[in-house]
Image 1: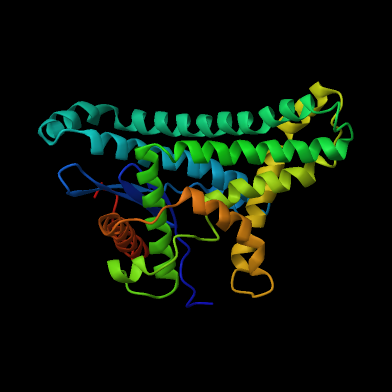
Image 2: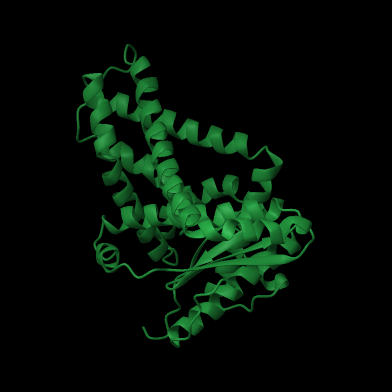
Length: 314
């Protein structure tokens, strides 16, 4: 297993792509003047969290919260740098430098809170909608199925509506570029625009698949608890959020592991189908940004393995 490639993940941001490895995370953004700018953050060693990340079902919760916190920092950078007028660049950097650490920590906290708030809404709204159908679907089994149906409808409707906005459409294109780069790397192809564009914009390990799995897993988990009275239903849905997240993460890892097994690869198909909505075919210049981000990350990861200092922003 010594020749096994490291596993890299990514995230689309405003006019760019973030990639993360074992030691670093890097974002490349296409500025309005067509230049590409990079943002780099080293991963700080956290022994306690690293230990938890090795424990099945717990590791997923830590990984998700870490991704929400880390991803929000890169998303904040992309929004600021893309919108910044080049003539105001020096002034903005000078003004923000003293509070950089405070800003990073604050953005991370907002990222985690935003994720948790969204998860609460996404979990609880279907509960009340399903409860409205109780005169028709009165059994616990029917109620849980209706809850899952409403949750799926909310998810698909939300994605469809936001995809209509020009900004999110471009983010989804960069999402597709991110997947294409990862697929090209994992398939051993050289990272040229031509080779990357030939790859699929879908990937088994995508966060979109994870979101869909939370819907499916939730249906099975909720079978173990009562649906009446309503306040008990609400309380157990909130209490079971970490359980659903933890199991869904393991399902995601399992489908990725079996993606090359002919009789089992279909397990990840529902997540891939959802990615048809959350990714779009990228343009060549968007792929260039994704390649630039990933190559910068590979360089930093290589230097980190050699023990070289890469603490500065690059």
